[in-house]
Image 1 (cartoon, rainbow, N blue to C red):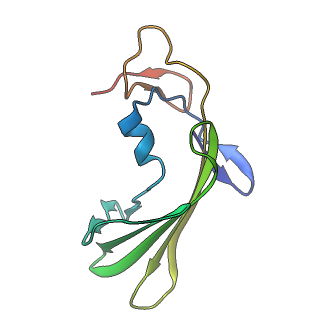
Image 2 (image 1 turned 90 degrees about the vertical axis):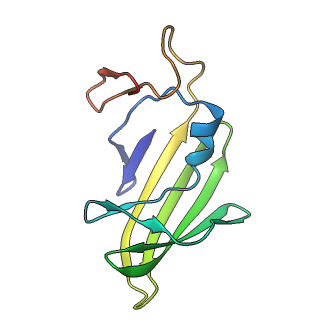
Length: 123
């Protein structure tokens, strides 16, 4: 997985992902000012898009996740978080996911590398 900033992939990590973990890639729920956006409704699943309503900083938010590409092999998710009481974009990010193959030998689901390539076992 890599975060895409100004068209360039940054913050690359390798992750051993189970089907459950992979399903979550398509619906990012961002942190806002150090706290998770608290869901206040079930996600709305649309073709190539997931909408999530939540509360952050005591304000209602809409998190929109737009999917592009093949979710089984190589895809990107653009996430935009907008306040519902003013409409301004509070946060946005694009993440790119690419299947590299099977998990490395000895790894379990949830294990990853950090941004420096060091292995981080799941806790």
